[in-house]
Image 1 (cartoon, one colour):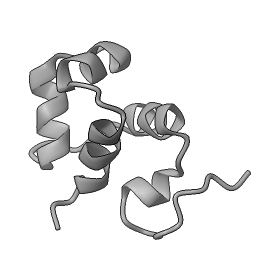
Image 2: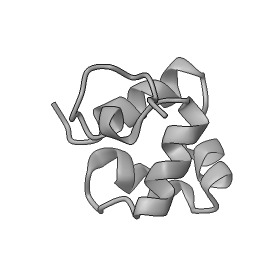
Image 3: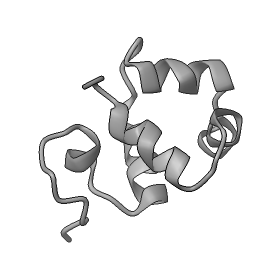
Length: 72
């Protein structure tokens, strides 16, 4: 399983393009694509933005848990 497969799956579940996610995160489509492929590490602040956007925990995005719920 690719390192950031869940990020791609969540994006595709919402029918959002990489370009649209790049705009949401203030980065280019190419940079976002590199995030999904695991070619570059996602900065912590960006990882938090992705988790907040999808309403899941950062641990879920990083495959540290199978529970997508964000626990406050």
